[in-house]
Image (cartoon, rainbow, N blue to C red):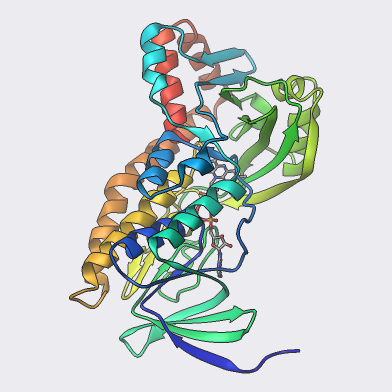
Length: 396
Ligand SMILES: Cc1cc2nc3c(=O)[nH]c(=O)nc-3n(C[C@H](O)[C@H](O)[C@H](O)COP(=O)(O)OP(=O)(O)OC[C@H]3O[C@@H](n4cnc5c(N)ncnc54)[C@H](O)[C@@H]3O)c2cc1C
């Protein structure tokens, strides 16, 4: 039965999406004493198709934002990386005392998103944010003094009024008329990836493995270790100019073809559940991140690395900064776009150069000849290995 009643409710600030970007924004706002309503259509813990690699930069943000130590305890720190390509393997583990010292400080980990995101949501609730299950259908201007948010919730449709809204709904979240879909205004192709969980995996327990064989370029495959012999295994590619194979068959080939490096590690492994695929809004993309009473954070703003597909660090960082900027403005001023520009500037300075750098690297490494040359040149140099590992771990 349809419930035609529409309730109205006032809130101070609404954050849409309780993934890493939304939780971070809610934490920053609640810590500054603002009243925050954190809305998500999913019930937590919820799964999010992901490689689950929480890089060093993301971990540092998660700690600053108050993730509980107990939630991290089962997931060990990573000690290096292995890159497999057609013409050799690059072992990016520390082979010297200096290397070991450098990597000893890295806090990167593999933590299933069902666990990590729920831990961040709990941190947001501890900070004082109110989490509510609701599917947001629309965000519009409200009398020129705030934002109106239309939501469908289990108790019936509701209209919420707030002074400001943070949009952090992840891929494809285009809720606000001000945050129009700029699909036709350029930017890199979108990504698409499929991942599955396995137990009984015969892969290095403290290293992440990337597979850059020619058939998967310009994407890559990964095997990321989880506790007790488990692993997150996946392949990612581009929606345009990517591998010719269908994603599902690319994944099957990656996990079971004898020519795939992952197949050997998965020889005795058992899949857990079904693999899931999800698109990635790779950046940088010309996208409006602020409007009157509105900020867009995380993947909703295309803040995802085009080389690695890593977006958790950007989500936490942009969410936290969006929350801080809004919290600074609200006590004395209306959150009009002009007053929110420090957030847009922050993203331009901190996230966009990194995304552009990844874009250049992605185009260069997408050529198998370049990759082959790199594997040959870098392999004999142990310190470069440490640098490479550190970069990869930071890229997340
Ligand atoms: C297969 C795959 C592998 C990846 N691997 C990695 C990795 O290993 N490391 C890494 O750093 N990044 C990885 N990424 C990227 C990473 O998953 C994203 O960049 C990250 O999740 C973005 O965080 P977010 O908070 O912006 O959005 P999300 O994590 O997508 O969260 C958005 C939330 O908003 C909610 N929502 C959406 N619309 C609405 C609505 N209308 N109403 C209410 N709620 C709504 C959703 O339910 C969701 O909980 C991967 C991506 C894919 C697809």
